[in-house]
Image (cartoon, rainbow, N blue to C red):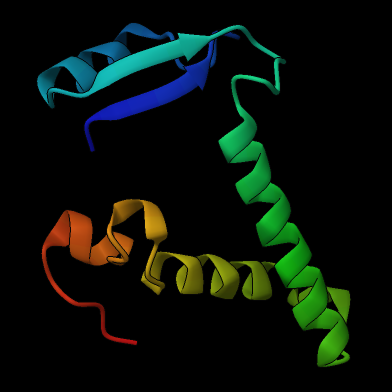
Length: 102
């Protein structure tokens, strides 16, 4: 990981967190809190995850108690799927330099 982007609302400002990032060579970028304009990629991903989980629950007639499990599955599949912005590689292959086992 090279960059962490967070809003500047104070949650990620503690010295311990800043020191951890510095020790690991991770650049911390901040933006104004509560502005979706700066956070559109994350907001879009969150919507995709929620909508995918809702579709899976509905399609399989699952009870709401399975929500956490289904969200974990959606995120797992997202990480293991090829992504166009990183030359159709999976996130796992990009950062761990190995093919994912699905």
